[in-house]
Length: 218
Image 1 (spheres, rainbow, N blue to C red):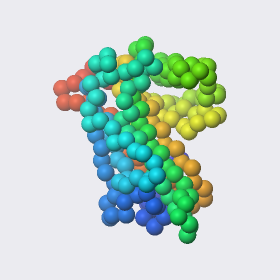
Image 2 (tube, rainbow, N blue to C red):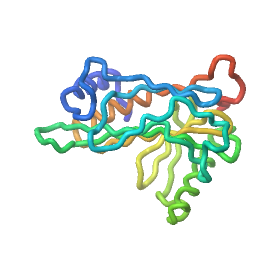
Image 3 (tube, rainbow, N blue to C red):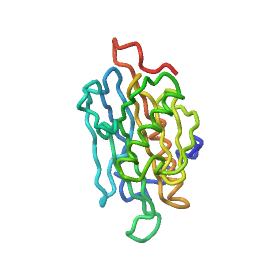
Image 4 (cartoon, one colour):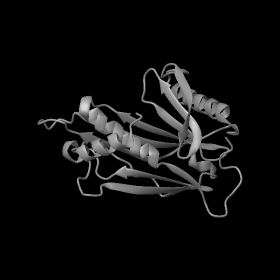
């Protein structure tokens, strides 16, 4: 999804003509902020949404230190979930869909480095698939590589059966998963990728004023 700034500008200007699920006003991007314990997560998204898909705006604040926030699978509330649809031709049927989902997770072990973050992701992923009665490793083989996410060192996780995910720690016991999934082809897919790149670039995790310590050590 690596695109030059010039390419992104070109594709983003094209979106106003090809997208059917994004607001076509002159400034369709909106900034969102979520308070998460000692840090704040911010990101930008296009306004509008795909008409036939449910969307979830997410909470403005989550007390991540409260035990009741997370279930037995270490899943917290979704921080954001929305689809946008794209139409590159004359037909009403969308030619592509773009999904953004930001998921809050808890780790049973301290997230001291990328190895610990990878282990937490694998454990929680296995918990989920066992709960679905599929068994551990239900989505196939996982591939991990280092990546900058929200201004921090995190992970890009790829699998054989699902969309890539970006994973980054919020503090020593909590992390987020960011899913950007595009389904279009050709020019529509290029528009989706450009928007996904802008969303990913806009992600920031910022310590709150006066809050220091264990935000991110790797």
